[in-house]
Structures are given as C-alpha cells and as structure tokens.
Image (cartoon, rainbow, N blue to C red):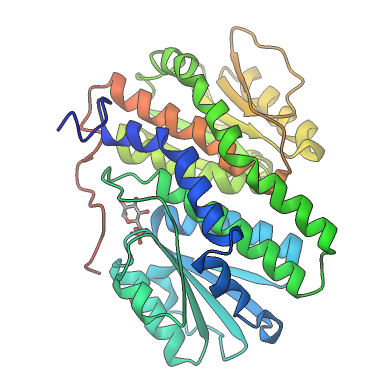
Length: 363
Ligand code: G6P
C-alpha cells in the first residue's frame, strides 16, 4: 500500500505531486501531433452558434473556469450546466450546439444522461474523459483523453488539472479556427500553457508554508472563498475540495456578492480565502479583503498581483505571473494543498471521505 502511494501518506498527496507530469502529458497529447490534437483539428467549430459545457462536481467547476476562457478567446456564448440538472430543463440545443461533457471516470450517471439528452436533440458531443473506453468516451462524437493516469483518491486533483489544460488548449485552437487569433497570438498562448508544468512544480514548493498555516485552521466551523471573474470560478473548486475532505462547511462567493449576504456571517476569526490573479481587478478584491478583516476575519490571500503586506490577520501566498485565463491551474494547487493539510491535521480518512464515492454511477 505504501509502495503504491509512492512513499506519500495518502494517494491524494501523491496525485497532487503528479500534476506537473499529468499536465505535461496532456499538453503533449494535443500539441506534439498526438491523438487529441488530431481529434480537435478534425472538428469544424465554425458551425456552432454556442457551446454548452456540462459535468458534475469538480468536472462542473472545470467547466465554469472554461466558460471564461472560451468566451474571452472565441467570442461564442457558453453555457455551463450541472449535468444532474441538464435533462430536466428542456435545454435549448440543436445541431448547431457543441455540448462538451467533462468526466474523469466517464461513468457518472448524470453526465451520461446529459450526453444522451444532448444527442437525442441533435447536438454534436465532445467529451473530455480520463478513463479509456468508458461509457462517455465511447458514446460521444469526439473524445479527448486527459493524460492524468489512474486517480485513486476520491477527491480529484490531477484529473481536474488535466481537464483545465485540455480546455485551454481546446479554447485556443477553436479561437484560431474561428479567426479570432493570429498565428502569432496562438503561439504565444500555447507557449504560456506550455509553461504550466514548470510553474506548477514551483507552486508545489509551497508545501511547508501551507502545511504550517493549515495547522492553525482545523478549528474553523466555516471557511469562505472569494474571488472575482475567473478567480471566482476556481474559488468554487477550492471550496468543494475543502468540504469534501475536511468536513468543514465552506462556500465560494464572487467578491462583489459579499455585501449581499455573506458579510453578515463574517465575525472574529472567520477564515476567508481570497484569490487574486486578475490584476485589473486587484483593487476590487483587496477592498473585499479589507472589509472582512475589519470585521474580524483572518485572510489567506493567494495571487500573483498582491500588493498588500502580510500581517497578523493576513497570510499571503504569491504565485507566478501568467495570463489570467490560465491562472486557475496555479491557484488551484494552493487550494488543494490547503484542503489536504487541513484534513490531514484533523486526522481524517482523506482518500475515502465519508459518504462520497469516486464515481457516482447511480442517479
Ligand atoms: C464524484 C467525485 C468528484 C467528481 C465527481 C464527478 O462526486 O467525488 O471528485 O468530481 O464525482 O466525477 P467524474 O468521474 O464524472 O469526473
């Protein structure tokens, strides 16, 4: 068992550490004339009037991140739907819609049902799946495989990261095919994506800092995650990861929504995790940070454009600068490590959290 875990105490930590490799292999599978690259090239993206992205749990969260990336680069409207809701809402889709299904296992019952509903209505389906030969991989019109390798821990980490880079690569390629990017712009974006494995390795050097900080966080009853724009999208994943394995209640909010509700819950020693990788929005998120600190909260501030100084109430984790569209791949590493070490400090069964399953094959 310990050999399988590569010397790590849990599969989750081993899989967190494997992310530079998982991301690199996924990039190669698209850019180095690999099978995924051929599938993407074979798709005529000009025929679609919109994209719909669907999945469950973290796969859904990858879709929320992707909406920002696709809309910014492709200028095509994107809807993100929970797969468990999709078939009950009479979705407006037809043969000019591309439905992108995201699933690590390829066997999640609700995502399979969403896929079949999309096909029944004539949409073109494309899946991003980690498990070869799974139901979703077999039944969609186009299949892209993430190269994360087998994932054992129930809470996904490396498969999620592989999904994100696959979605970035897809968005950049689509944008070029739609005439929204010059060859030069495309090259520049690809080279930023190609820099991710090294930057993620750099992020993983923060283990000691996060481990130490997490020892001070086990007592919290509730933790809030805030961000704006794409930082909000990745805050959703940070919050999900934490509640899955640490059993601490958490919620993710778009920073601007704080004053519409959550601020009433902020009191002495509430913890707020704030993310700031969109430099143009730094002042906005910083003002949220000030607001919660003035009401007694402590803040873990993660970002690549932070100008504040650390203090008694403020812990800062700086991450490398990258195009904001790809920054979730870096901030999520800190969020994963944070969840992992909070749960580890509580002595919980991290790889098999209570009541959760790796793949939910029933409705
Ligand atoms: C379960 C897992 C999550 C995962 C979700 C979707 O809830 O615990 O980690 O994100 O299913 O699974 P899928 O295999 O479709 O990605």
